[in-house]
Image (tube, rainbow, N blue to C red):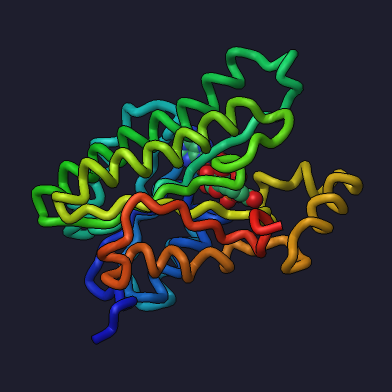
Length: 250
Ligand code: NAP
């Protein structure tokens, strides 16, 4: 019995060219999965690293600022890799401005990518998974699925929405053998948090609150993703798993 083994599974990871998505793709591949790396930018480095691990990798070009590509992502994955067992909804953006000045464009851009596309890609994947007898969906949430944050109103709304979506989809799709869960990363050193790390005061404030005493790396999230993608999590449903160095505990 190898409950965490993902051999023979196919995982779709959105936003897999960089940052957390790349880290998750490599962790799933190291556990045995083949990877469809989905994104608007080429994912050559991710594809090469997955192949170096002895797994198959496919790049699926798709801009998830609209839901236009969601069915094509499923179709290209099935055609290229022969299945779709795991979906990691990772692609996301953030816009920062005072809420008093926040624009409609910054509201719509974040909600469309972080929430609307997450739902409709999950729907397209789940239609296949239901027919195939089951699957695993992992949404990438945030500390701002639990907290308010500051100067990121559309991001907080989107990630709080992702936590709610994770629960309703678990309720509806558990009977079809589909597990829907989320990972809520703490403060991870990627392009998404570059502005925070560049602000010496915010950086010091953030570090002071992390019991682990450091920013997380994308690789810190790999174990949680492998667990939630594996048979070991067959009875885990609608959970938002914080991987945050203790941030929420403080
Ligand atoms: P990142 O390095 O900026 O990565 C974001 C990824 O999403 C990139 O691959 C990006 O592609 C992709 N993406 C953005 N808009 C897209 C679109 N319209 N179509 C397709 N792909 C798109 O940031 P990250 O930190 O790894 O973020 C990954 C996820 O983790 C996001 O959902 C983010 O909200 C979440 N998260 C991050 C942190 C953190 O501390 N870093 C904490 C909590 C949650 P491009 O390279 O083409 O832009």
